[in-house]
Image (cartoon, rainbow, N blue to C red; front, side):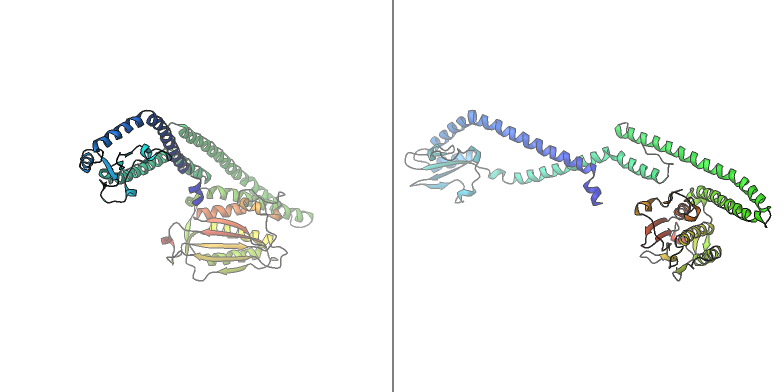
Length: 448
C-alpha cells in the first residue's frame, strides 16, 4: 500500500498542480512587488512626503496635542511626539515597538533622522512620528487567513477529485487486465469517455477478445483431439490384449499395453483439464471424509509402487466432513503423491503428506491445507513459478520416468481453484513441497 501511495499517478498530478500554483503565485507577487516598487519610488513617495509635511504643519510648531488628537480622530493614523516639553502618543503608553507601521514606507538605514519618510523634526527640538493605525483591522486578517487556508484546501480537494475522475478509466483498465489474467473474459472494460483512455480501454478489450478466441480455439482443438483419440486407443488396446501372452510376443504385448495406457491417461487428463476449466460448476460436491480418502489413495499407491518407501501420513484430528468432489480430490492426491514417490526414488527418507484444518479467529473450519513433500533434489528457483503450468516440465526430455508430459500439477491447480483454493510450490531443501488449499464457498457447507 505504501508503495502504491508513493507511486500514485493521481497524487503526483495533484502535487504538480499545487507546486505549479505556488510557483505562479510567487512569480506574480515578485513581479508585482518590483512593478509597485518602481512606481513607489517615482510617483507615490514624493506625494506621501508632501502629505506628511502638511500633517506636521497642521500639528504646529511647537506641536499641539489637541491638533494631533484631531488628526488621529479624523484619519487612520497614529502620532507620537517626543521632545523636551511634550511626551505624548495617540496609542497611549504602549511600547513603541508594538506600533503597527508600514515598514516598506520607511527610508533605508543611513538617512538623516529628520529625512525619514514618516518622521519630522520641529524647530524647538520635538520629533513627530507618524504611523498607520491598523487597530480597526487587527481582527480581520485572522478571518482572512482562515478563509484563505480553507479556500486553498477546497481547491486542492477539487483538483484531486477532478484528477481522480479524469483517471478513473485507469482503475477500470487495471481491474479488467486482472480479470483477463485470471481467464475471466465475460466482463469487458467499461468505456466511460471518448478520449485517449477510452481508446486504450477499447484496444485492451479487443486484445482480450482475440486472446479469448485463441484460447477457445485451442481448448476446442484439444477437446476434439482427445475425443477422437479415445476410440482408436481403445481399439488398439483390445487388439493388443488378443496377442499371445507367452513366447516372444508377451514382452511386446506388455510394452504396447503400457504405452496405450499412458496415451489413455494423457487423453483423460486433457479432458479433465478442460472440464475443470469451467471452475466450480464442473464439481460434484458431496460430504467427504478427507482422512479416509487420503488413506485409500496412499494404500492404492502402495499397491502400484510396491518397492517405494511408505508415505508418512499426518492428518489433524477432528477433521470435519467437507463438501468436496471426491473424484477430483482423489485425482489431486494421486498426482501429488505420484510425483513425490517418483522424485524420492533412491532417497533415504520417505515422502510426507500432512492435512490440517484452516480455522480463522472465529474458530470455525473454513477449509483444509494439504502438504506433500518429497526429499529429492528439488528444482531451480526460476522454474518454481512455472511448475503448475500446462505441459511445463523442467526436464526438456519429457521422459515418462522423470515426470510425464507436465499435466499433473496443472490438474492439481485446477482442482484447488475449482474448490475455491490455490496451490503453492516451494523448495523444502531438500526436496520439493506442494501445498494445496481447499476452501469451500461457505463455512455453512461444512458438515460435522
